Image 1 (tube, one colour):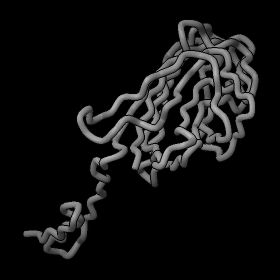
Image 2 (cartoon, rainbow, N blue to C red; image 1 turned 45 degrees about the horizontal axis):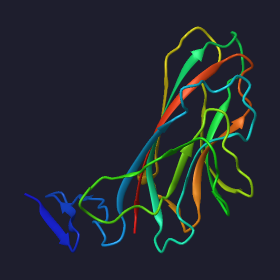
Image 3 (cartoon, helix red, strand yellow; image 1 turned 120 degrees about the horizontal axis):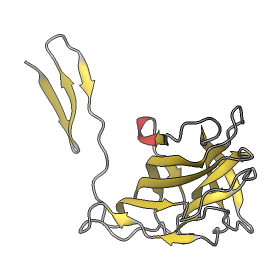
Image 4 (tube, rainbow, N blue to C red; image 1 turned 180 degrees about the vertical axis):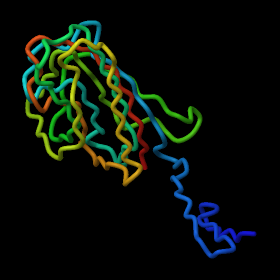
Length: 207
């Protein structure tokens, strides 16, 4: 037999006969303004170029500068697949997630976020999401906090894809304030011959 402890958000703890306590992590409900969202994109029909320079911005998402809400990133999934196999022994590139502020990147293909509850909450304030296989233009953009990094496809004979999943909600959501954004940005120059392609999906909530 166990005892359930309940609060305003439902069951928050379960105490069993040995007095062990299991804590239930809850997520916020749908607010009147805000909600839960996702957006997907890709590097386009062309490959990521070989020897892509360090600090090249390939994808960006920015919360509107006039937003009265904050965005809390909970999960990002990036799939990378080799198109041209690099020479054996080549050094892989590195792709990282980084915050930015001050200005909005331009160029590439714009993507449209969707509400996970189509009839709940309100439209997102993540009003600009875009990506490019070569480079977004980042005039006046100020890059700030570094997030996780991952190796990109590089050398060898295997074309197997790389799945890179970041779960911020396992620790705490990554918070964006008004005018803040995140991007996928190369953190190390890519190999001289290997080319690759990526897709991504980002999940967050706003309140």
